[in-house]
Figure: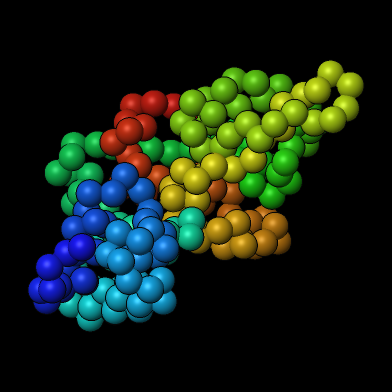
Length: 199
């Protein structure tokens, strides 16, 4: 049992957020701090509001059911200059494959190939290597093909709370094609994908 001392839980949560490898769920914070989950949620919301009010260079975002500190998109240019990285762009094939997996999951490679009208093996391997989607299992049909779905890293990359945060297919289709071709990864992801290409 810890000695009775006054603890600034928000400061402790900030420390946890800084050392975490990914989003932290409120129930995990509650467990570590030995407080109720609703109290952890309130503290996280307070931190979010504190960061918004103080115009910090980062924000606390809800991603994949957990909270994560992320740099602000409007500072991407300076962060790239500091890191000496160039913007990473998705190829059209990678975007098509990501969209198919995100919206149609669970989906097999044959279904992806059929929807795209071309062989997608190379793109699928690359996206699996980048952990943007994952193998969910095998489909119960002859040949038992692998089925794919999005990963936690996919949600983190696109800053999504869950798949319900995806734009509708109509919204996605209404995006100008040049905008899709120029889609960039958030700065947090660029260092791990620097100089790679998704074909």
